[in-house]
Image (cartoon, rainbow, N blue to C red; front, side):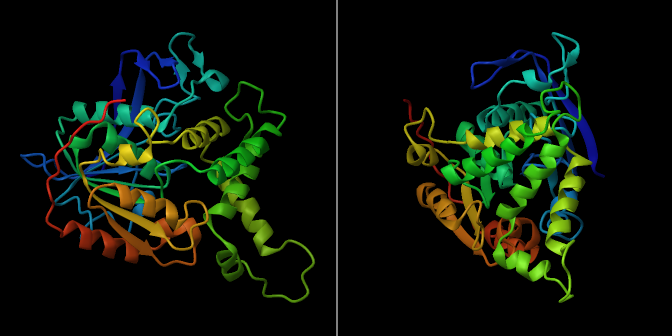
Length: 351
């Protein structure tokens, strides 16, 4: 049975930015039963607007008779710190003031999130995660976590992600935040501040999640006579409204900032040195049509993690192929999981 729980960390939590949280909570789900030697843990890190219910977005990979089956696996997924699905985020009450954080919520990095997840791992009594899996932002979390606690991860799967956010990715995220800033309500301290701006931000993001082929294939008009209300236009409007019904602009703002600061080499002597610290048997998966995280980014990760495997998914859906090409993803995962793991020795690098 899928169970939702809340982990409370009731101590001051120092952040990479130098700021602190007076404590935090993480909403997480578990699915299946932890076996006696605790060797069946599958931990999933979700993408930008995802949640802790992995079936909502990777339902073809998780479930009875699927690659990750709760009959044999203990599946864990936590809503990211800074999120809005039960974990501490900008709409949470600041215990020091008794009011929501809103614009005063501190800056978070993927390293902060990985440390928070690791506290939850310890709380659950899990010594080692058998498979740590994440896509997009979740892939950044999973990689950072595998560097922070290399001996706690037996196998790592990073999908459609990277080791360092590129200027291209930062520019896309900044354009989305600029859209939020143009909303006159953004300066308010209300739950719905900036919501119309976030709709536009989502529309911008979609252009990087899909591509020319995906739009031309899915949004073509059937009529030769149309002058207005084109399918592509209404699709953008619909997707903005859809997100606004389940998300908030504060969380969107902070999680895109989190992505911008992603750099596993920070304080570790560079990306290559950081990636060499990963002990986990690693599968790196890229999508051949991905505009947001193109294949060179995954190749770099695979090249510098010792003995990593690199796999390409063929898709016309762009970045969203990591969610939509379940058949290819399943095949890559099952091939990887059949491999006999090779134990590595961790030699920490100090800078």
